[in-house]
Length: 451
Image (cartoon, rainbow, N blue to C red):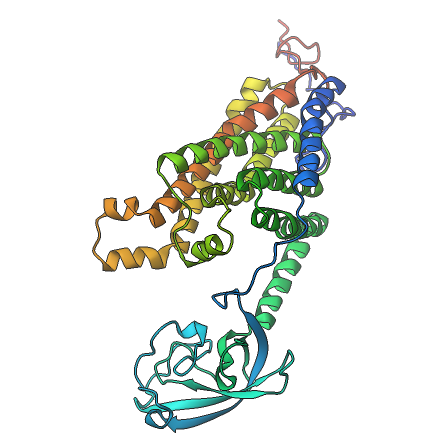
C-alpha cells in the first residue's frame, strides 16, 4: 500500500524577495562599492578639472562673412503678393540660377513648397515683404519669385530675411528662409509631453538631462573648440561630463548605473583610439564641404581632422548609453530572478540579449548615416560612379569611417558591459537572497513510498 503526503505550501517570502521591476537594485557589498568609487571618483574629478581648465570665455568674435549662417538676419512677413510678367521685372521665367535659399536678389524666392504646378512660364510674383525686427522695423522691400522657384511665397507668411549693410539700399534685404519656429516649437512640446506621459518621473529627468547635455555642447564644447583647444580633448571631457550627468540623473546613483558608466567609458576609449588611427591612416582632413570650409577659413588654427574625431565620439555617446544601460539592467534582472546563478551563467544569459541588441542598433546606426547622406549618394549614382570610387572619395569615406568606428565601439560595449555587470552583481554576495532549494528527495515533507 502506498501513501503520499501533500507537498508543503511554498515558504513565505524572505526579506530578500525578488522583483522584476526596473527599480533600485539590491546594493552590492561595501567592498565592491569602494572598488567602483576608487575608479569613478578620480575619473569624475578629472572631468571637473578638465571642464575648469578648458572652459572658454565664449566664442571668439570675428567679422561677419555674410555667407551661410554667418550673416545678419531679421524676421519679416509677406505683406502682399502681386502677379507680374517676368519680362517686366527682368526675370527669365525659367529656372533660377544660384542657390534659391540664399535670396540674393531677383529670382530668389522663399517658401515651404516647390514651384507652383501649371504656372504660366512668363508669370512671376512680386512679394512685398515687411521687416518686423531690428532697426529697420516696418521697412518693406520687393522680392521677385519666379514660377518654377523651389520656394513660393504666400501672403501673411512668416519668413527670415538676410541683411547686407554694405549693399545698395534697395538690395540690403532678401528672403532667405521660412520662419519655422511655431511648428518646431509645437513638435518639441509634443515630444516632451510624450516623454513625460510615458516615462513619468524618469521622463522628466531625461528631459532635464537632455537640456544639460545641450548646455554642455553649446557653452563648453563648441566655444572651446573655436577658441583653439584640441577638439579631441574637448570632446572627451565634454562627452564624459554629459555621460556622468545623463546616466546618474536618469538612472540614479547606484552600482548598476556605475557599471553602465564604466562600460560606456571603456567603449568611448576604444572609439577614440580606432577613430584616431583610421582617420590618420585614411588621410581624412575633415574639410569636405562648404560648412567645414567656412569654419577653416574663419578659424584656420582649428584641427579639422580632430574635429571629425570629436564628432565621432560625441555622435556615438547617445547610442552607447542605451546599450550599456540595457545590458546592465538585463544582468541585474537575471540575478534578481535567479540569485544562485554565477557570473558565468549571468554573462551567457545576458549576452544572448546583447546579440539581439547589437543586430538592431548597428542596423539603426548604419541606416541613420545612409539616410543623412542620401542626397550625396544620389549624386554619385547619377554620375554612374563605381562603388569603389564612391567609397574612396573623402566625403563618403568620412561617413564610412564614422559609421564603422562607432559600430565597433557599440559591438564591443555589449560584452564589456555585460562582463562587468556579471562580475559586480555576483561578487561577495553568496547566499544573500534566501536559502538555496534542497535537492529533490532529501526533504522529509516530499513524497515517500511505504511498502
